[in-house]
Image: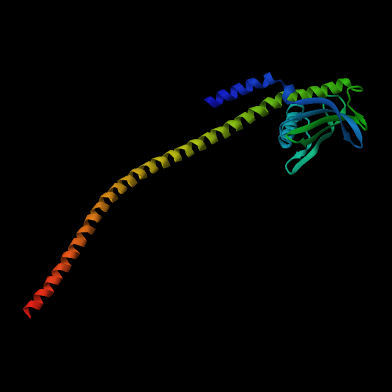
Length: 231
């Protein structure tokens, strides 16, 4: 129950942080085909594979655009969809690209597109199409980020639950060992007292042994003297 409550609190807290605090989005450029191309640059904490899969699925589900370069036996840094109809951007066929680059604990994702040879969408020359591309990126972020952190919360909860179970098990083992130590301590004390009693008895027996040995020696001397007298 407490984990569900924690999950609820963290999900509520995510919008309070604002997307801008956990996701960087900016107009930028990327070098492609021997030139700098306008792009929408995004930096997210998710790993490259996670981000590639989510972006590919999102474009397929929402816009029927199929990116190539990631999937079974494929994991390219540049995913593309060439000569496709991307109706949300333009009524013309286009080439749509996304480049992924892992940077420390974040993944940089650069989205760009062209309407033909050396005709790339930019804020200046194709503002309408570029704004539409930015909206698609923003919509993806709004969809992906909460789900990503919900999954992170669930995984953290599972780890927390597992660690708490391990800690409880270790504490139980320690407690059982301490009980066994106490039990053994009492047994040792009992044996120690018993040994004290046995030692006292041993001392008495040793003293008695000396007395008997002395008496035996005296009796042997008397026996020898009696034999001499009789002879």
